[in-house]
Length: 57
Image (cartoon, rainbow, N blue to C red; front, top):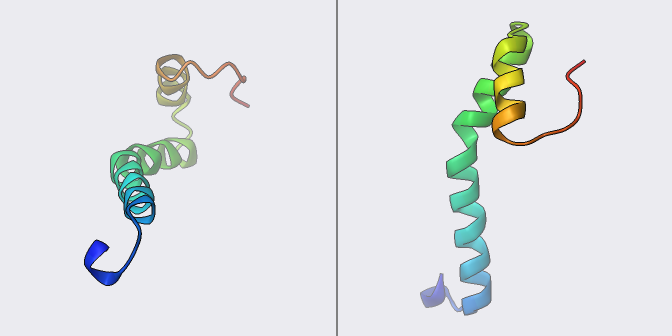
């Protein structure tokens, strides 16, 4: 990106966004699938691990 004339801030923002997406994609996909399959046990485990205080409905 820097060779394309982008600023360091833009390159860092892109890197942070890309890494965040890469690290969360599989987990998010699995949670969506668990929800579709009614796997409240997995959703509850994720809620506890991620310290999410909202009730699962």
